[in-house]
Image (cartoon, rainbow, N blue to C red; front, side, top):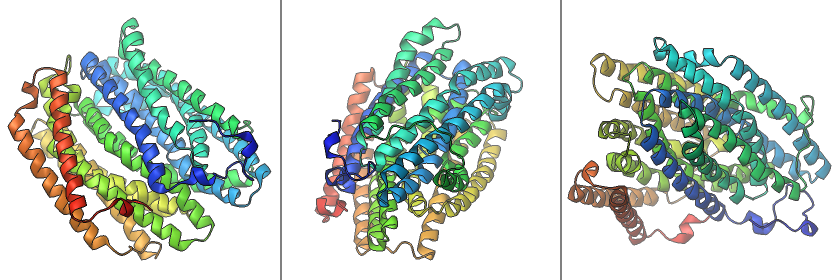
Length: 537
């Protein structure tokens, strides 16, 4: 991304230029392109991780030690903080007051840094307790708990760097600059790959090297974005400003979002705790299947949510109800257009995808089947997860954080009840794949979350579906049916994926199958009348 011309500064440093604003589809495409690079790097990382370390033992300890600060990252960084920060930032920008905007950013950065420093210190000191809390099933494995606590002390400081990086990304996104922030996950994955190849072999317990890789990735991501803020004249001076009016406003908005914006991560943590009492490897199988679910969510869902939040907040600040409704309607259609075929494809190709990415070295054919079980179950929730990425910002853009919080509470309660109800009989019956019940509960709870958010928007009159939904849904269903037929025919003809010899052959067949399915999906949509103009907002 080229640096902006300082001589062409807009009246407010946070005001995107016309060229930067572009359309929602264009901005989403830029974000998705960067995310695609990240996911490709992520697949390489996961493939290498599964091959070198397999499942169980110290690798399970690393997964827990990685998930805890990663969960808090969603709270303090791109989740809760971003959802509360961006609308307030845009509100100040609408006043066209450069000094007020810079003061707000300085005080917000200082307050965030101070809070996260305290959280990191507590997390490092309480690492043994946290390990027992998030992996209760390891109570009779003190060595595993000790390894988890050791790696938690290494990964917790990552939270500080990634939180400050996310603040910088939110500022850049609010000015229409999505490319560089979207590239940071690529850097994270490349750093983790380097840690596996160079750091891990130098430790007696190799996954400890991965924990250090997580910390290094956070430092590098922050270093990538911080200079860009300076070029915009928005680089923060850390001034803890808990008394600053707008910082206090963000704090008030954040309190409800601490829970609602991280509901998916809360459900994952709940699932991890349940999985720790199941068969050895269950934590790992859920982790690897979740990584595959994140591919379409990151490529489309996160891109949609990231792009639409500043747009909706600008429409709300400008009291443009029609523009707000139109953008939300567009976002929901795009979420379904991407989410339904993505979830269906993951369901139909769960084992081929798992075998292609993971089934090498220490990752056995049995591990592949078990990871495919949880991937199949969790894929059912992909459309709902995608819709939530659009529905939740619709409330945050209006600075309504309480409605998503109420929906999140019901979602987490439902997830716990469903996990216990589905998984317990499978566990007691010693059924292979009992962890699939955890994944299914997560998917069903995600559907409930999306339904509650959508119903609240409709009941409050904030969203009115625009004309054309009937024809859109008919096209979508017809295209998905055609895609499913093509994928199933090809999969039947290719046979068992684990019997295919070599990664290159597996990747080739998988790309052919996915490409044929996606091509058929797109062709049917076009034949039924969908045109590029329908995708533009």
